[in-house]
Length: 299
Image (tube, rainbow, N blue to C red; front, side, top):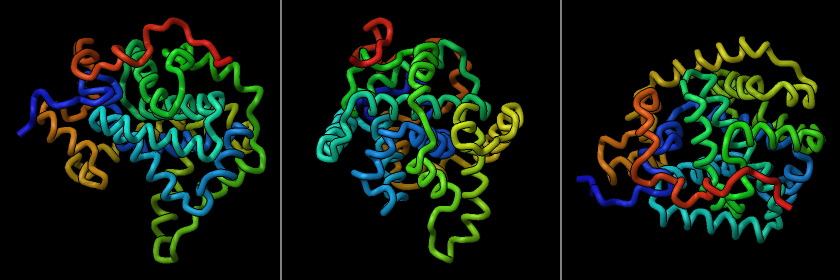
């Protein structure tokens, strides 16, 4: 039986984040984020030099997904523990530069929001702004000052405009892109790579902004065509029963619903209802720095 006084975590069922992050298109969004993040030469150099990405890329992707899951659906204590682990790893590896952490954060949030909206989840402008603002809480977990993080889609767009001259598809970015196009897998999984991974990876590339296609030097279909493909893919994946999708390890959503009750099951379509869906337990506006004013770049 669910405990109605249980800890709803950093976000809680009343947040946009809670409703969106259970969507299966998050996986394609995550791969888009990795491709976008790779375009910052200093950020991607730090990842390749100081992490195990090339030796254990699947492990890195799983750990990232686990962090997103626990920070969204875990208890406050679990999310804070996960954040402390991430900050410690960043310090030990020397990749705790706030400027680079900000780039990684913004590329990730933009990717989640862009892919989910273009694949058929209808958010109002206010809801999209709320989603960006909520993730100041997640930014704090990885070591950023929430006040230094964009808190609306307009501020996020402004950040990308400012940082764009620093981006390039150098050798490191191309190594990651090559891996994502043809990841190393056991021979028994080669058919699955061709059938499942290759179209998903291609769609993640197509969903990048046009300036990213230009930097990589590889064209993509027109944006309207990409949006249609994202919508069709989202429609297909959402037909997979949630009871199957959420059963996969590490089962963050199942545990959250068991803790808080069946009424808290994530459902992005509830966002079409009253604006009050954005309020309630775990609302991050209490602690995420969202009232700190306009975004400013660190330094």
